Length: 471
Image 1 (spheres, rainbow, N blue to C red):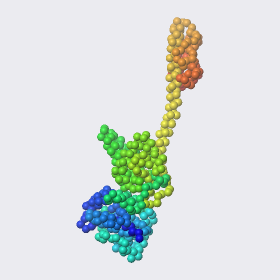
Image 2: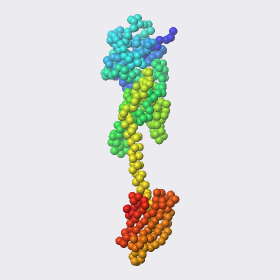
Image 3: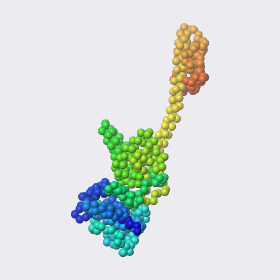
Image 4: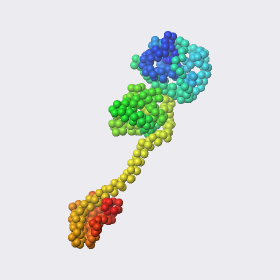
């Protein structure tokens, strides 16, 4: 006959002579759970099953260790139908074995017909009390029958039942994975904890994560600017603040920064559970590798099977949608990108590219005009000797010099002097087939001298490309 699986249930009560101030830190140390995590994720939802196993002796050992520090823990058989969440004072408690729920109802601690939801379901329905004989079945191990004492902490505010079940199950799962004694992980013996599968509706890709990071950048922008005003120390404080912003939030009960929350995302380990602070730190500093790879490490979030960036691969973490809850059926429909996510991505990626395009459209023609004018000025320097020759002829009362003159620049095909006094001319023909001349190839520029000693010029090219003296 198969062994009946039992559940180790933390009731949230205290044994006589103990106080919450001494019991809960001691229990956290015994179970190797962070005290804050025990308070926020476990006691806030007690009663709650910490572990399921068919090794009753081991459960009894854990129960005795907990009793030694003042915690009331009971052992109950797990029904073949599985455990349930129970809605008490608008707070989802559990998961709990059905035998425990039946015992509370029979004892009058909970009302008959209290609403429950099976693990893996979001449907709440009145609890169906089994036959009296079943409630007191011989298989029920009640090794600690001290009266139930409500924990000192205030109950959590009401939430939507279906979301409460999901959130409670996530917290319970996260806690169970972390409870280890003698090197044994309860998840291997209790509920089935498996690595998150791949899926578009499970893992968030590059663009959604990018939008979340942009929002986080906006949140941090002003504080970091203020800190950087202080030399040296401000820079160090900014780095520390950036690190704590990400690690504290991603290891908190929210499992996400403000940006990720705005995008409906959370950060989990490989089992879909909450990160502890150490792993959140590892993930944060792993981002250095993503930067050193010229940000290709971040882009991997768009290519890898489970949408992991390089720092996620290093830390074995995942960024998933908030509806992904271990133990529940995985979602099959990918949530649409919120409009503010598209705005954030457009602001960071599309607008800069568009601005660069606009600047290029304006600046490129201006630059080309500048280059052409520079070439014309270079050509103009070739006629300085011809100008002197014409000026001397005019001062001597002679007619305009005539004929060809040589040029030292390869851009000039020829220089021709002509005209009748006082309107002497210098005609320059730009060379063809020379790389440096570009669009000026084969063009002509004519400089004309006047009796007032002023030179003017005309050309077959656009006047905007000529130097100021030729306009």
